[in-house]
Amino acid sequence: MSTILAMRFDWKDWGVLALYFVLLAVTGYVFGRRKQHDVRDYFLGGRSMPAWAVAISVLATSLSAATFIGGPQQAYDGDLTYLSANIGAVLASLLIALYFIPRYYRHDVATVYELMEIRFGPLARRATSIAFMIGRVLASGARLYMAALAAALIFVSGRVEPQHIIAGVVVLAVIGVIYTLAGGIRSVIWTDVVQTIVFVFAALVSLLILFNRLSDAGDIATTLDSKLTVFRLGLDFDEPGLGFSLSDRYTLITALIGFTIFNLAAYGTDQDLAQRMLTCRSAARGSASMISAILMGLPVTALFMGVGLLLYLFYRLPGMEAPERSEQVFLQFILNEMPHGVGGLMMAGLFAAALSSFNSALNAMASSFVNDVYRPMRSRQSERHYLVVGRIAVVGCGVLLCYTAIICIILQTYRKQTLIDFALSIMIFAYSGLLAAFLTALFTRRGSEMSITIGLIVGFIAAFLCDPLIWATWLSGFGDATAWLAEAEISFPWRMVFATLIAFVVCCLGRSPAAVEGPGSPGKAETGDQGA
Image (tube, rainbow, N blue to C red; front, side):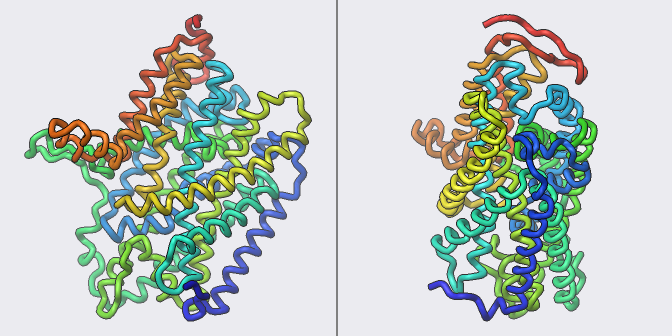
């Protein structure tokens, strides 16, 4: 039965949380009171946002509650090899800065999917935009679930049941929708700046408190020696096949290939992140904001994983009882061990991380719906009409994310994954086809409306069939001949690679009606083949 956790949270904690939400409301009001004249102003901020603020907003959006809760869990359960995935992010950012962002600015697009219409036709634009919205609903729904889990722990004494998490989903979604409606992307970005300060400060405070509690725990570095591995090659030259395994998620080889591909899709084709770069005054500033965000993300992620390492030591102390589920390790420490007032700050940090990614997802999905789907069908309406539709779309997307978060409660029950792995792996279903479509558009003279649309579907299906649960199910149906293959597990970065390659081949089967820009140096327009 649910009860208020007065024994864990007292008036100081609730007071800190209340101050956080007041700060959120004031920030949203101050930066959202500027009147939006059209949808480009609402969704692009008049292309006047400073690069440093955009960089922090990109950082906040990419981290979310998955990092706040999942980062400590990742280090608590394993080691620091997750940090090596940032190598792929840095490589991807350089490619995006060189080839993707300049094209978006040259064609003055409001969403990245407008490039698909320029290159292939209106059907390709609608298809890629819809694929993004489906993928974003899945990914952001998963993140909303994680934040709701934390919210439920505040209000529920004893075992957290699904209905408690559902209540948390609804409350957080309502808050996110309200302040996203207030001021569009400009309000979202400036609120992200404030929220990033809150959740990074919260992580620093928790690290200091843990160090203080572990002052008698001996030599921390020696005790954690086996968990301090950051780089692992993923090869053993004494083993058959060099010891390479597709099930390894965080190795240097996976980072160089799998996570480079993954981050190309995340930062180059996902409107949720790419929209931020489009709010800057120029392509150069947009590129600088993205690269800065990725470089800032490394120490911030390391900070949260450092918390996980210290939690590992803390719960090995005499008399300490570790949580049954490792995803609750940081939350349990916050609720049971933090001084009153500081616990409220920690939860404010968690909600800041969660809402910063949630409101950006709402704005990005509404932007794609209005600009790529609705406006082409109703092209003769006033700008005020599109603004109203955009705000209605924000509410509709919020409802969809609620339903998805509830579904994630069930999915996570049957998956033996850390929260970070769960959040990342669910994104590849849409990312595979999206990246294939953009690679076809930017680096080949092939592709048509139909092949791009089919490629998106094939990418989704390929990623779905490679999912561990589905993979084992459909291969086991062929009997003993494929039993060994059914037991093989392919980690999500490699599933992304395979699904993208398959989708890319399908996208290239069509003949391009007119390639605006082919391969070669960015900025050089070329004419492709003519054909059906």
